[in-house]
Length: 287
Length: 309
Image (cartoon, rainbow over all chains, first blue to last red; front, side, top):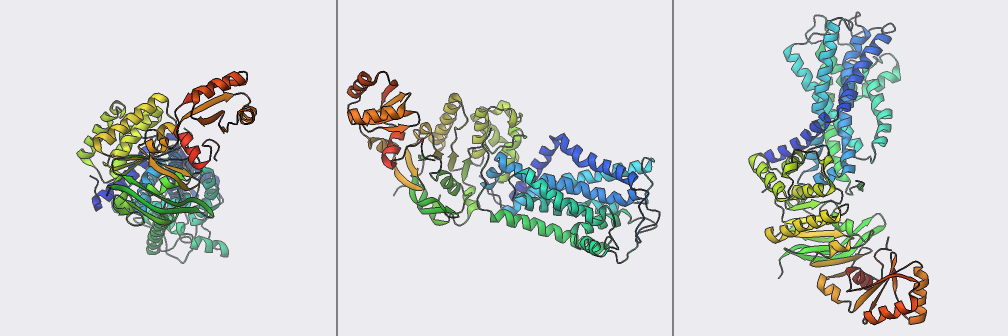
């Protein structure tokens, strides 16, 4: 009775993706953690570091720290949501759900795609929400004025671009989480790998100038995500960002290429790790 | 030639240096209720993993429903339903959402999926709970939902891993009634991995596993006939002391099984009376019964079922 056509495979991916979304809506705390905390960061850090910030060469010199930090926070939301959603693979393993999927006629690529699709949708939705809330706050004077101007076209482009970033991050989360038996273990990786990855992406500070630091920024795939969002936020402005040879604000085509490549690599990487581990780990049987 | 669902030939499986399955061979005829019985560490979970396609066939060959399990697993998975020891339901989703999700994994959708879900829920008497989240259901209900989930794509084979663990006796009976009904009405072949005797008793064919090897493979009736006579089960406060006494005074060789002594004899009544006469003070209770599968396991493997770890 079951079928194996392409449509059926899409249903399988969608079934897994939709499940992520339903689970998310039933855990309100995740929503608060993933959206309210970054918003708070933006307001507090923005206010606190306001005085000590000097706009980088490639930006308008009137740019406040809060404005500089704005795309960085959007990426932080993408990071948190996409990754936390994909680490639910650890929960799935413990609760037995994963076993049920592994004995269904679902390929490993479909498993990864389903998992990251859910995470990506949730992440982008929240990042868009933040960008709107932040824009409104700035507009009504609750936050410093920003030179951001977005048209319908660039807004659509922005959503698409953020989706690719989120896909890459969710794929990365899947690749890492597949090896972990506990969420605690994953948190360790989170604080030594993923948070620094965000900090050194030009999201928090430009990082130009200092030699070794600018190289890390340059090699960090997330840098291209933050920079890409920045390009799109100012796409319509009268004073666009200047393209200079900067490690923290590479040219837009480079941003697109690197971000796409990162997403493809992490999703295929997720498929690879999921196919390699033959032995399913022991399921906890505590009721 | 018998119509076979599984034809397992010389399957071995290792985890590093540890051998979990050692040259295991057996066949499962279509329509049977087939069990593999063994204590923890006997290799039964590994065998279950191989048959459910979670683990690869490392050496040997498994032909299942005409499909070579070292080949196209996706096609094989379309034809089996697997219920694990720990339910594979998502507790945060409702019964309906779980079943829809699982149906879609098998490529089902739309009205045909909906009507199949309704049919299964009604059959397992969970339709009135379809909108409830799984986390609020009792263990027995969860098991029934799990069973419905496994059957959504009309599999030919149902694989069950210790299916009644965690269920109370009532729920256990209900669960097995449902399974038996499936076998009778739908002609589904049922394969059960278990360490519980009452689950094994329901099977018409059994493989006894001991340390990764097949210790016996036959119809349950035939296995039981391997042991003639009766079994005496004695409970006492000081078991080892009583065991010594029985051995030295009466020349009886009994084996310890958990918190009881068991021994086989041909003249149970006489022996019972004799033991009660001599050791009334030591014995807490004594009972006489026909041999069980536990006795068969002991007779075949020389291993006490509850002692093997």
